[in-house]
Length: 154
Figure 1 (cartoon, rainbow, N blue to C red):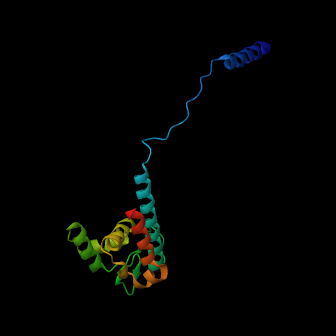
Figure 2: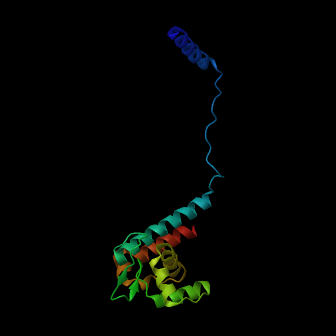
Figure 3: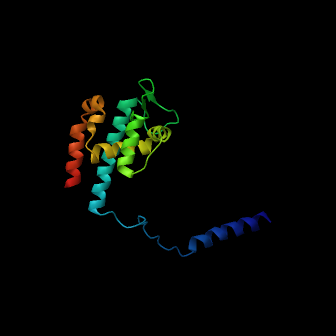
């Protein structure tokens, strides 16, 4: 009986080896290839995001998202970018036409992604690097912004 089971097992392996194997097609990347312009835009956005991380770290000592709210100067400044809620309200109204309450402005300042987008708007569209005077000097933000804008214009 053992010999029969062993013979059956060996013949199954032998037959498995004789099955016609088809060549596998090389894997293709999903979606269309990125154009040069798209790659350049993605690189510029990546550089802006890195600059925003540096600014947030300089301003608050924090990195990226956090469940812990950050307050500075007795609660006057909030979030990773140390926004004043009144500044958030004014910039959101200017950018989006929305009027936020002070609570909504504070919540936005504590949300890293939304605050980052607002900081990008202020820096790259409104030219307000000076809203972060100490970190602008420490990080060389004026130079970084100039380089990013030059790369974007090419």
